[in-house]
Image (cartoon, rainbow, N blue to C red):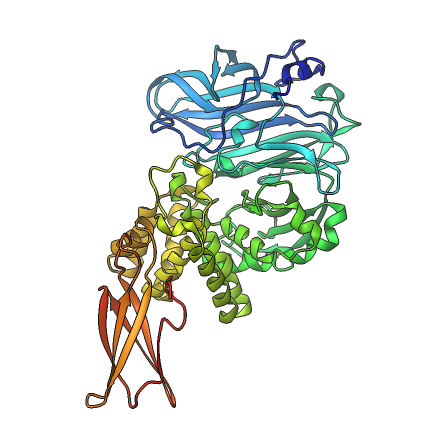
Length: 567
């Protein structure tokens, strides 16, 4: 059954004489939405128009299920052009479009809004779109777990297009500002910094009907973000400061505070404060850890927000959204908090230029999210987390596919254990190959080189090769472009005359998987202790010899858990 949206909108007339949000007596009908999560056809975004900034104004309601919006896009022509800027925009009615203040004809079909722009290379254009309707996805108008009205954006992967027009692809990053008119009882969170205290909204600027007075909130991010992390959230929140982090010269790239620090806050439903607060006790410490380990914190602030996201957590830049139910129930989600905070560096500040390289976001957040606990709680805690991650990967059907699959078009299918668990293990094994000093130096160089930009897997490889001083193509190819993992079986015998153990290491994984090259620690466990040596295993059946003063009681491969292996 299809909801009769046009009939609903016609009965809820908007009176908005203010600039930008003009009323129409008979709103245009809303087009049918397109499916979310389908990769764009090759060449879809190949036009010489770069969106530099989104300025989005929204009017929200606590009693109606539609929104009024205005989006101004400041764009730059990167080459001479006389054609269309093709924007992703689905399911909402466009009321009008202007370019540099002049009304233009536009085409809005199948989730694509085509706006004519022209000029010489370097020309600047201001494209403004006025729209309204019931969002089909992306902006969730509903009620909290406690039954209170709320509005939350939930964009991943390409669902921002359901509530504002955009180049909805991770390769095109831009700055953003949000002006949100919301019921006065609500607070509004968004990316970046609050540019002024919330003000009373003039009655004339009201969009859909509300239960009472409204306030206007204005937020702005001065650093470029991927569109999928551009969000607003509006509800009755209690806002608390967890702590200040990244204090000190050069440790916070975008802080506007006089002390240069980053405020780490929680935005929780009043009914959930007591149950949710324990999950965020160490949030500021996490920011400090990643700042020290990786590089300066990239954003103006860090808000941790209870929300209606469909995911356990969503790493929106400077405003992380967490699933409301887990926090309301009192479940400690500190591991998720660490994962999402790590995303501020990887995924948000350094963004995969193509969805199929999602492991550069999720694998990094999985690994560094666990690595915080290595620093905070010790190596045993960290190894236990990595082992849990290994078991989750081994038990999945994803083992039969490579991590990076260029032909994948179902973006939701990328949320798999290859991009999360195996991606994290790829970094763990790379750390073992390179050693801690070179590995973390390479990670810092990668962040510094691509911060506020985009990268692909080969970009990471090149940076890590520079830090390592040797080729790593073999490593990246076998772990990311091939399926599976090595399955080891070990045999050994004691050579008394030579005073050594002869160890045979078999790789017994399926034939369609590669024979892996693996730097592997072999440990002989003896009566009085243990002897360990590392060997570069490259053959299906590898023979190595380890000198020892007595016959081993046992031979153990990879005793410290550095290899993603089946046995």
